[in-house]
Image (tube, rainbow, N blue to C red; front, side):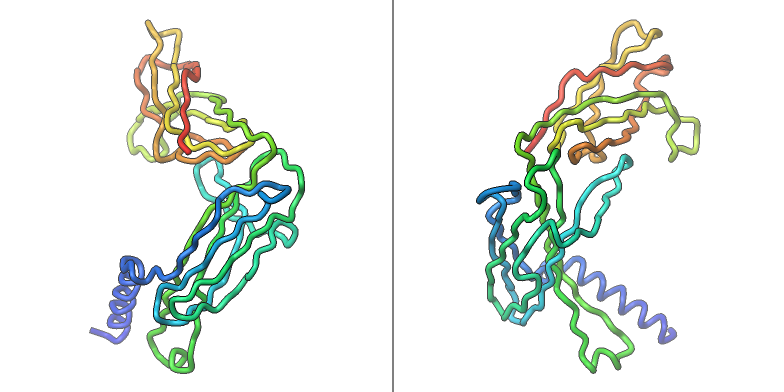
Length: 252
């Protein structure tokens, strides 16, 4: 076995340990809340960051704007200096130490719709001279991720079915027809759907058919976002479907 193969196998073992060993998740975050208002006392959340190991940990705090596109892909966007002030931005935690953390909204005082942010705590890799000279280099980088919601003054949720059509599954090797729905959140706050009951009608159907659209591809809808959903065609006679939202429920 060549040295390259030995290095590859050692790398795989190291990555596996880092991913599946719970002891490596060494950073703890305890916040006073997840929602921030744009004014007043509610514009600040605070908490503690804890190092639960017996080693010093350098921590870097990152905030990005979070959204999801129509196909369910998560989008993270860098933010400017005029949205949040958080202190500290970097810190060095001694073994088993915890430090206070504060996050304050300094953006616009009035927003039309909720904004979702991705708060991440990462262990900053430290390379020693020994690491630089070693042929096998690896770092263990642990992360804590928390979603923060900046709320508008009058939050409301409104789920709607914008369109429905018969299409073919792009993943299918055969001609398998599907129903394609465009589901929209027309409210100004996020929705976590627990039920989306839709009635499908067609001139070729003797009576309407009901479908529950809930699934793993629509667990979270940010304010103003849309999602494309593919569901099995319940009746091959359907060609020009009309969709009507019968009932929707959301979880917290």
